[in-house]
Image: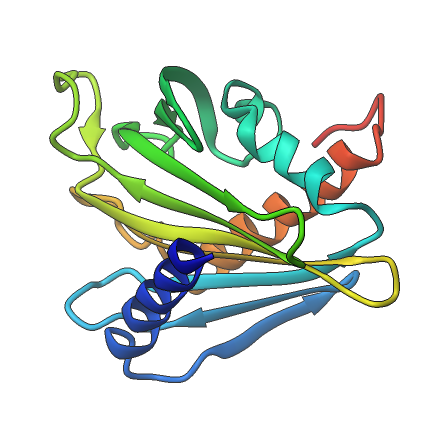
Length: 205
């Protein structure tokens, strides 16, 4: 429980103290709210997506832990390969699609899973490891990325899902990191997660 609290405080410090501006609501549609926030020292904004899903925390957690299936529902993700599995943590190698004429990105991400079945919250932290593994000259290595998934059980038999992320994509993306793009990434991620959890078939994610 102490590790869960420590991680929560760390994430709070990162997103509140580094981002001096308050969160700005940029989209509210289909039960999904998307916010963005400036981050000091970065040209890229952070985003936060919030929704409520009719499911259980372990069900969502199972989808998040299956990192090799992330490419099936997370936007702009071309591939996700499990590299290392530890107790309550995994490292995955991810290749992300960039706009036409720009170089695709790659990164090693560490996911740490903190969940006590007796509690009503679950925290999944995400951190890029820029010095992990050999660089591939075909891609631009993402130098910095931090974020988390927070799952909170509600009284109405739903789970509140919060997905927050700040990524420095590296190199030049010529405006690809605009607010509209970030809100699209956050919205589509949560929308597709809902479809995965409902076992939708025959739909174009």
